Each structure stands twice: as structure tokens, then as C-alpha cells.
Image 1 (tube, rainbow, N blue to C red):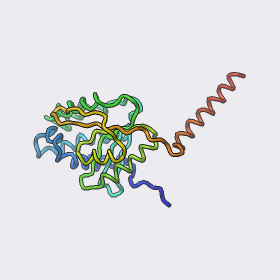
Image 2 (cartoon, helix red, strand yellow):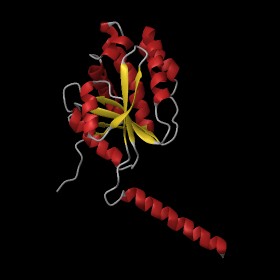
Image 3 (tube, rainbow, N blue to C red):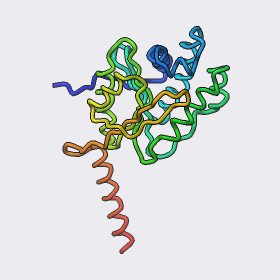
Image 4 (tube, one colour):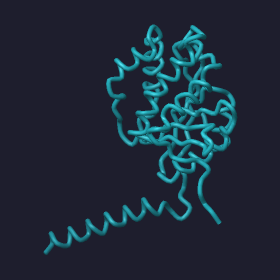
Length: 219
């Protein structure tokens, strides 16, 4: 019986596709209308900014796609502080143009509210034509193998419902710069069923190595 999960890990060549999915999913929302007031510019600007963050996720996290490319999730592994995207100020100015300040203000607000403890961060869930439940549940199982809590701030009501079904609970609600309420959600680290073999074996190997080192030192 196959245990393959119904998502594939994104590669560098998938960045443009994911950015387009994110833009299409976000464009109808109130936050997107505030970020890019001009409807004629909204999709290309959202896609350009999403591209910056998707590239960054492939360096400091993970992104997953349904096999048919119809939905995606973008995650950051926040085991420790991670840097901003390379040349972020210049790239954001180029991508957003006159709307740069709005993106910067929103980014600063979200960063200020982000949990300090180690976690995996669901930064983007993009399923403009369906598939959100499948993409989210499958990528969440991937994240659960890392035995860390997960954090999200859904941008639409249906996303929050999906997250709550997976065990997320409200952490806090705060106002975005445009006044829109943003609800952050938190899911505790899963209890391993039999443990995470990769993590357990790594820890066991380290203990064995340390024990040998202690023994040599004692001699």
C-alpha cells in the first residue's frame, strides 16, 4: 500500500507558478485591495511580491504543490531567526512600486506578532480553484514529521475553517494596518506515534557519539 503524500515539494522552476497561484488567490480579498488599490496592477504586483517570498521559502523553508499544480502552500522553518530576503528593500520597491510602503507596513506588523518560540510558519496557502484542503492537510503532515508547532494567519474565512479542522486554535487577533482583523492560529507540536524515526535516529547517533567521546576523555 502506497504511503505517498498527495503533494510534491516545489523546486526552483515552480516559483513562478506558485507566485501566480498566490496572486490569484489573494486578489479578491480586502487586504489585497488595500495593498494594491489599482485593480489593473493588483495581480502582477501581488505575483511579483509573492515571488520574492516563495524564493526565500525555498532557502529557509519549504513549498509544496498538488501534483497538478492547482494549489500550493509556502512554509518557513523558524527554528531560529532567519534573515530577510536578499536585497529585499530594493526588490520590494521594484515589485510593488508606489504600493511599496503598504507591503512594508503589513510585513512589519506580521513580523512583530510572530511567535518567538521555534515553529514552522504557514506563510501562504494558495488554492484559487479548489484543492485547499488536500494541499493543506498533506503539507501539514510533512511539517508534522519535524515535531514542531505550526503557526498561521489565514487571509480568508475558509482557510481558517480548514486550519481549525487540523487542530489549530486562536492565538490572538490584531488589526492589520488597514484595520482588517487578522487572526493568528497556533497548532501544538504533534505527539509522535512511535516517534520520528529520522529525528530519533539522529539524536541516538549523537548520544552514542557523545558517549564515546566521554569515554575517551575519561581514559
